[in-house]
Length: 302
Image: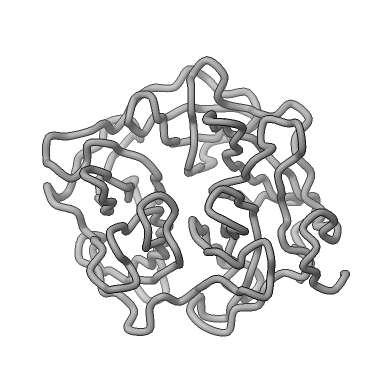
């Protein structure tokens, strides 16, 4: 593997290949962005942020490429803190699906919680947000939750983004026994921008963290500036400290002249038997659509 470089135009080969039919979701639907995918019973289930509807919608696919008609499953409420609903993560624990999502109103972002038996009908577990920006580094926004159930320790683990409202600045961590009450890590933020790398010198955000071969592997966004995002990889033994950036970062970058020519946002990866599938939203102008990248083999090349 090549050594790290600050030359964003010619990163080392990361072995991720964009699907030739991208984007796989968008078009007449308008802006479709930050998403969460579960593969169950041979089908892919995608909950995505549908900006024109200010809601989270569900769509399904047999192959991860061709998606069915979306259905809104969680929309805005009159609670005063979730006029827009977006940026979900969906986790199955036992016979129940758990969703943490971002509610936005009055220039602030907060994280809410809902559950469902079928992925369509969701019930909010609290009229109030379950995680909010309280610390100086969090400024006015706590958003982009990624949650996993740690069966060994019996806790939910959340990595979330906080900071500026338009694009948050860094990644924090919290734990919960019940999904409602969260304990933030005392050393937050646990992952911050590295100014020595041009592609992430501005900020880092919107992560997904997976357990893989004894490591906590983080897919995240690196921002060169407020409007230019690329998808990167890092790993840590505990998901909190000692992060190692991938030598081929950024692993996915905008393609000049394409639908994602200005930014590649919010990765969500699914590990399969002999490959990885990674969906992300790309931006061109004011429109965001969802595309797919594929990695053959399970070794990520660290």
